[in-house]
Image (tube, rainbow, N blue to C red):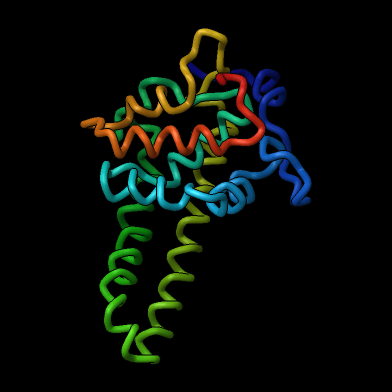
Length: 190
């Protein structure tokens, strides 16, 4: 199901870069930077990435949508859904290899300044790749495909995202609840 353009305009607002701007008025990139910097978000996202195999950018996108009164359609819980295709390919071909290289150099970088500099350069490239993935996700949202307005009947964000977990564990469910709890202002689904 796709949303029509009138309905989308009501939910998605143009990016504003002012720090005092509420999260729901920011671009996805600006939202992601601000949200990821909040206490507990980085650890929760990494737990879900490394412990459950979820894409941090997709999680941030879902949180951003929630602040707009929107949610990914239930079908997107399937990581092989066609709408994930472009983003998944980018993540697999560009972002993930950079992440693996950066992580592989962690120990060597502690003892060798030249490797530390290389690792920092790779980290910056990884961040740019993440930004591109978020740009792709924001563009997907702007089409209205794969998203829908939240309703009063919808469960809260953590419960909706729990359907993305192949095998829900306590740690992963707790991480989802941290994401939900740190959204500000509380979303319409709370």
